[in-house]
View 1 (tube, one colour):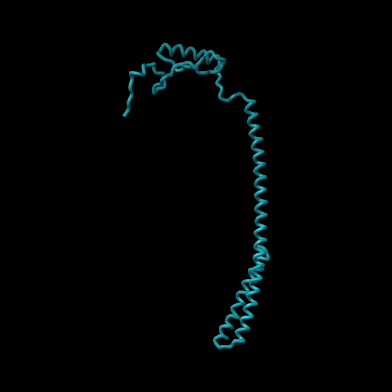
View 2: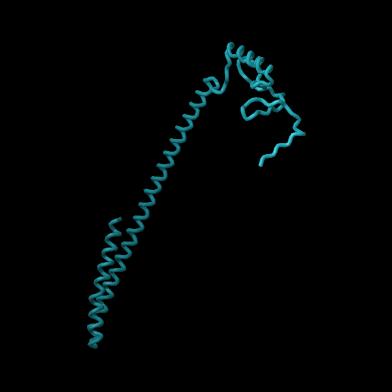
Length: 179
């Protein structure tokens, strides 16, 4: 709180309390009919009232200065926060760029490589699965260069609840309903 504000509030309050004494004297003089004493009391009351309003103006000036100082402090804090956010944003962008550069330097994480032994085992299991009535590796091209990719021109495949491939049936004659 600004010193002018404190001085103004204290001075105004004190002068308003001082008004009580001449007002009491005025009431007593009125009851007695003493007009000279009433006029004198009114003079004191007017002086105290004027002083109270002067102190009120001082308090108003102090409050304006308080508001200005508070506004300046708030503006400085806002500018500091904006500056910090900009710095943080620059740091985040640098980190993102570094992470992107690291990703470009490394091999893709989701690539699948099958060793030569694995290819041989897969072909053997596929041959055995074809003889049994279905394969679990349908749609996988085994002759690619170490990457398993599905063939684009294959027909849709249906799987059973056990995870095996169902033989293809005519979908127009089969109706399935569950209640």
